[in-house]
Image (cartoon, rainbow, N blue to C red):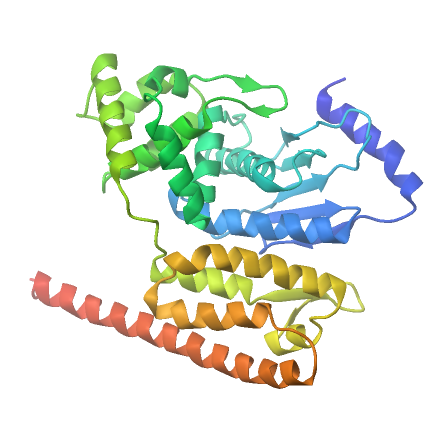
Length: 382
């Protein structure tokens, strides 16, 4: 009996005893669907999954959505056969299920688990159901590190400072690192820098997307690296020098990651978007003014606090077009109680709508101006 089947049987044995149906929470359609016996956990995991998708969409080349989402199942404690961290199963037809154990339901372990499942889903989408995706440890750890350092500048500083105290890891051990039975194991810092380095070295020839697709299909990572980056360094010693030079270059960079205008717009739109279940059980988008009007309810208060923390980590790197909107939304998330706060609520919502519209206008006008400049630079089409 395989691990996944044992887990399913264990869940069937435990869930009926709870006397309640699991709560379903979904990110945008075709991305993640989360089931948990605890509503707060379900929504927290779904929010983290949506953040991960947004941050990793560009480096992983994710589509707007998959035909079927990643099914995330939060496993109750003491379930027979349950993993302590997480497990990923790829079923017939490319369906991917992530089982979240008790030690992977928050923090860094949650990010690693979501990335692991997302890479399996991407591999199934790229290569079909006939090829089982191969997801290396360094890819999971590297993408999770990218996610962490792009949403929290302090983590990037800490990673850079810690990495300066050690020599660069070897390229071969990183690419062929171990994978534990309960999830990725290996050099997380080295994997993050390798992930960053390979993306930075990729040009218009699409070297990184080509390498990622090949690695997810399985095979010799050294040979694939040489094939995906042709004309660089064909011999192992040359590739090692190439990597170590890149390691030191990225450690010396002192610029914190800043959000592009599109990234800032998508982040704020996601943070200001609230979906609540109506009486029929279907999700309904609630306007910001309504959510703030219910800010003293425990579940709403917890969600506002969580979103406030997420937004606070990104304000330093917010694109100038959307900085005012971000500051207004951050103030709305920490609004207090009482009549004065109610009056302030209406003013903040009105200010948010103006700041949001201003940011959209600036972004559109800038894009139009750049398009006109590019057209003039190229000259008339013969």
